[in-house]
Amino acid sequence: MEILGLLKDNFPSLISGLWVTIEIAVISLILAVILGIILGICSISTSKILKGISTVYIGIIRGTPLMIQALFLFFGVGQAFGIRFDPMVAAIMTLTVNASAYMAEIFRGGIQAVDNGQMEAARSLGLSYSKTMRKVILPQAVKIMIPSILNQFIVTLKDTSILSVISIRELTATGQIIIARNYKALEMYAIVGCMYLILITILTLVSSYIERKISYGNKR
Image (cartoon, rainbow, N blue to C red; front, top):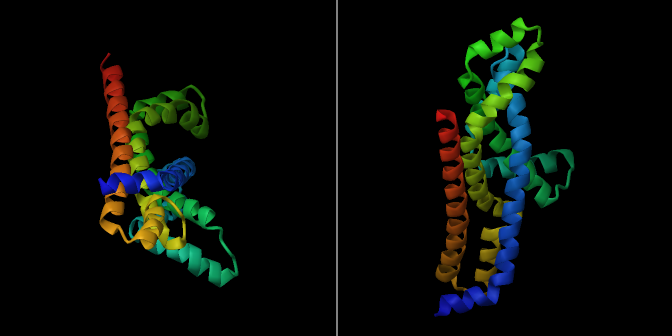
């Protein structure tokens, strides 16, 4: 079949693009988790300033398209301040900012899902608020949030396809480059789509498995 020959001829390039996709998604999610924890804690803080900053940040990021965020950072901010962003750095920054807004909501929900008695008990034993969060609340909240974090990783992985607009040679952009050479758009996009589907299906199965293990552990 012609599609198999196309895959064979371009396999190294496609794998290279897929690796860039995975690399960007993994780094972005790690940074988004860190930023999301901070924003999530701020969103439930008693400080109106911290809560306000978190609310505005989450509202702006979740209320604007990822493509606009990428273009704004890479072209808008770069031009305004005379900064020449490396496309890879800009891609990671964009996805980190975007995913962190969703991670913040995941962490807020996870923290609030922990029984209030845990906080009261820890504070009554003399632990500070920050130490209680680090030692008591967050470890329990993270266990609750793991399935949602894995789902967000899947979303972030798919979002990398949008980053071709800022010249990132991830999987989608690699497919477009190949199409520009051979004009086999239907076949090439089918291959790229199948590669995404296989990877995301594997991640979905892993996420479902972990979710079942957590649910089983909670019932014991």
